[in-house]
Amino acid sequence: MKNIIIIFLFTITFTSCEAILFEDDPSADPVATFEALWKELDEGYSFFEYKNINWDSVYNVYRPKVNANTKILDLYNIMSDMLYTLRDGHVNLDAGFNRTRNWEWFLGYPPNFDEDLLQRNYWKDQQWYTGALVHTVIDSTIGYVRYGSFASQISESQIDLVIARFQNAKGIIIDLRDNGGGFSNLPLLLASRFTDKRRLGYTFVVKNGPEHNEFSTPVEVYIEPKGERQYTKPVVILTNRMCYSATNFFVAIMQSFPNVKIIGDQTGGGGGTPVSGELPNGWIVRYSSTQSFTPDGFNIEGGIPPDIKVDMTESDRLKGKDTILERAIAELK
Image 1: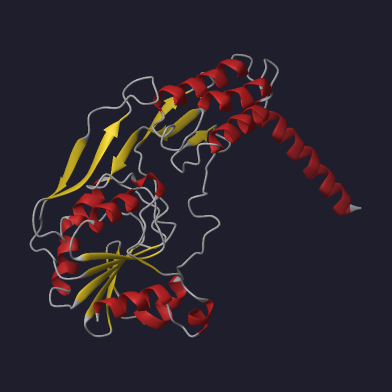
Image 2: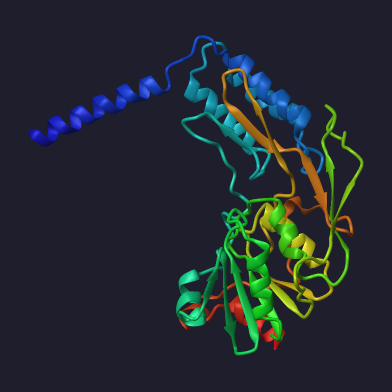
């Protein structure tokens, strides 16, 4: 009986909270909110033509589902479904109680990363932690650097220390697997330590008009050698599908350097710089507003293909081996 009472009270409480959370705001017109979202994307989103998306057709599918009596949670779900058609990890609708997301860029693909395996069989408690950079020596002649997130700041002095430590190494492996991105300045900072001269890193255009094909003239972003020293001997970058956004930019920049190879799976993409706008009901929408290209004109929104495609195998994992890392070691040796 006591348990039944508790369950009953929990049900009543939860139902009451749900009613309060999603109580309609009479000042927020569902139709006006939907129309504002559709127009914001129609005039500002940068990848309609690249992704071959007919935004008018999307409108015709979802607009009839909204009327003056549409409830808050229903409106959120309808708008979320509409945004999902853009297939973009940089597109989000933040309603306060939830935030939409599209993770197709890594879901459905092999993980290709196992940090526990690295800890036990490669790092072996010999790694250094220099800020967000984890580094160690592998196979006595190869430097290994793990950078888990561009959302974790790294300083010039920290990069200098790592480069100095491996100055005499035969090669360096930079492991970016599962790095979902972060600060946009850090890819430029890190890449500047691996180039021998000023190089074109990438170009980008900005959506600057209401028509789907209206963009600014291309802007060129150059990488110049910086810091106490550079490392221009062979470099291998390890990637998987969870490499996104700022990580995608770093891989795009580094791939054009003559001393660099990319090994693993294609990156997840994310080649548009996101901007945000506020809807009439206070919800915030975030979406891609630029397009970016490698020096040879390749649009990086869909990800960067590796130079050498490798997936981790279950048989190697059971032996304590990282298939992708082993391929990188063999490449450098």
